[in-house]
Image 1 (cartoon, rainbow, N blue to C red):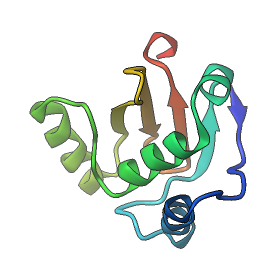
Image 2 (image 1 turned 135 degrees about the vertical axis):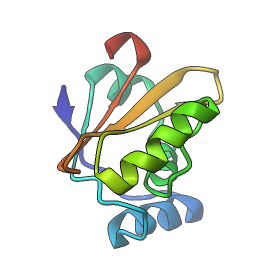
Image 3 (image 1 turned 180 degrees about the vertical axis):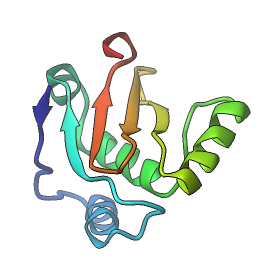
Image 4 (image 1 turned 180 degrees about the horizontal axis):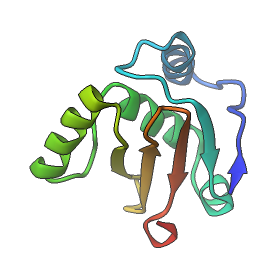
Length: 112
């Protein structure tokens, strides 16, 4: 796994999403951001920002209702938070914020 730094935003929507991340307007803090090399190489930067933004706002993405409910409970207990998102090509990534909120990891399902 590698630590990534978000690049300068290129579009107006990217600027807005990056601002949301930096101002910590989400439901929780994400801690350090880490991704696997595969995700860093395969997925477009705006998609990664969108996934992080949705995750921080409590939009858990492509999960069943039971998993979404578990995340809502985990918000209160400061347990691990898990989201799944599909890009425009149908490829899935997981976004996981670990218990304690000190790190958020982005990875592909086969890397989980």
